[in-house]
Length: 122
Image: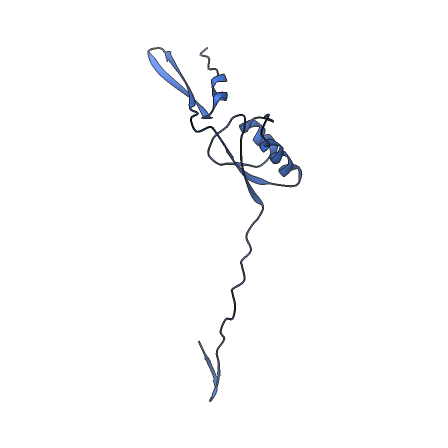
């Protein structure tokens, strides 16, 4: 919009060229890969210990754990991880009958690791 400062003198600013790009945070990374266990949906991880607890350790044939380890060793703070599973894999399910009630226990994510989950009733 023009500014009218004195009679006959008008100043109007017009933009030339593209607007500058606003800066965004680059401190959060995302990783996608094959893991020993864990959920299929993206999960926030803030340390290598969190990763190990949720997704397991080093897996033969997968570089995901090495990448996560390197990320945190080099100063990374936050990342999202999503595990890749085979398309035809299923969630392991176990059913118990306790006192005439049926209880169903499901693994957190898909894959054969869920077949190693045990549940005891004491």
